[in-house]
Length: 395
Image (cartoon, rainbow, N blue to C red; front, side, top):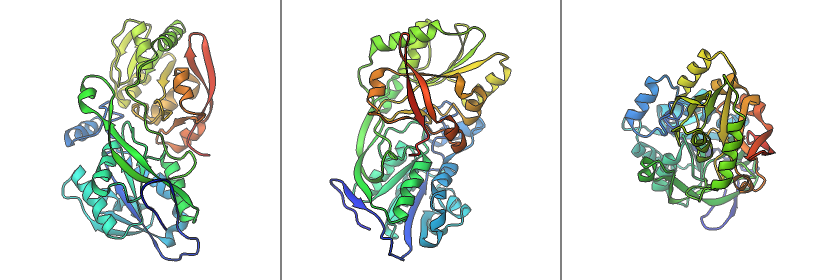
């Protein structure tokens, strides 16, 4: 194994090295729990309790398990170093990995201070690489604890991840780890960590700040890009998209409108006060409900006799269509509505900025993600649409 900061390096474990590899694992057990509840984030014990009271089930351990499953054939060569309980031990032992507990959280629920302590202790215990499961806040904890000279890999579990240190999905993260364990040489780059600027967020604007760099192994298209934010909106193109969608709205249909400035323009075209960062329900030109959670959407679908459709736009730069900032679209909601009733809107500039990379679906349900992969129609203007690939991240 070798690694260093600075420009791109190659890194990997030797195929002939029989020494047990030590993989650090840190799980933020509450990461992303506020997303399906429509809470825009999961920071703070009060937010976590509010999400749990709404019936939201935490997903961090499930997403960690998806990534770690890729390493099952390497169990005899791998030891996982972690904190006790739900910060890592439970997930590692559930998959029968050799597990060494090197510490525990000071409080319950665990705090950012616990995450940073875990990173420092696991590094000191001899880990070769730390895998962390969380969102941008957890990535900031890694910067604080480790700096930019120790390799880490983020498994996405937060609400809206802007940083470039995350795999595009848990399965993609698992594939990077599998390639490392198989002795393949993997690129090692410094990647940017960003997080929401809270002042701008409270004012209804999505603006991010740079917090540092992390050293991240990457392979192919398995790592996500930094989210584009704060760029001038293509007002005319967005207005054309909104006009096209509004003209095609069907009566007696429940429209579930996802977050984003492009989708908000559709509600603006109807003269409705929609939610920039939330999910709204629309029927017959009227706003039925604003800023709804996953359980509220599920109840609305159960009570609605007619058809339902979802209107979504992708995150600029990253290309995530499902699974970033819109976890209100739970697998249950997606299956109930169906892929054929998905309306995707994006300007051609946003699509072009992907550089040929596909749109991405990371719902938390690998089977659904695979089923929904393929080409999908994207409305890019007035009476203008393209076919574009939608992928679960597999190459």
